[in-house]
Image (cartoon, rainbow, N blue to C red; front, side, top):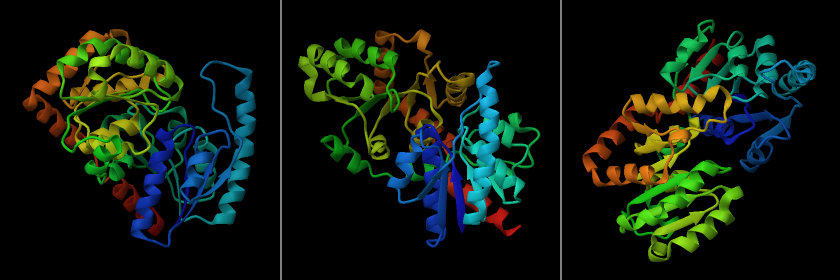
Length: 368
């Protein structure tokens, strides 16, 4: 199968696209791919590293307020459609799939106008502007949350698939996760992570919890700060954690996150769609602190969906308090029955066969 993938800006859009590509390769090792993104986005670095051909178009997102920049964006969109049509005619894909971010707009729209089978995948409960626009033109809208379906009333076909990132994570090695941290297999691990760029409020909560950690002497705390906050957090931790130094691990970034997650007992995290897909696929109880600085406050909607299912605890950033957060962690770790119940509900929420569902739909559309 010949597939064009498009998605960009953040890992939350890129990793699902790469997971779909890997599932396609499992199904048909002769599958070939072209990824269309922007030079400014993270995709321009990540995609070539995966051995996938990459091409770029110049496009920016719309401002939600009236702005002259939106006129420039419309012009770039028209130019992007023209460039995308050229790339599509040269590559001749069987299917084009967009996984979010404004770069998908001209690419998937161009494909639909050329009569190429098209899919968009929406990771969040509340869809972004680009996917809402494209939903009127594509053959299928794939959604990660059942709650998203109501937002796509005018779509041709809406399919609940879950997030394809879950398919990769569910196969991760727990033993490798422990080994990469230098810990004995079976050690209880609490991971605190604020996303690849970090989160100031979560890092401050990390530091604020230091005096309480001695109450859980057998637990290893893994603090993933993000590169921007690593040095200041590391210094604060070194200054305030002499008695528990061997049980506290401060890292700027984890490159093998699926494996480390597979070894983790409880996660404290933002509520980005890919992160939730990973946690639910593995059935990890979580305390979610959604970012208030995202479009449509969509992380809170994501987190609330899990909380209502009994799969997570949600704490808004305005409610965040280090002592209270540690109390919730302590309660979870000391109540195995509650933890198991949350784990089961998280697994029920996750969709480990998500990538398979999406590839099945791609095959169906190709055969129409």
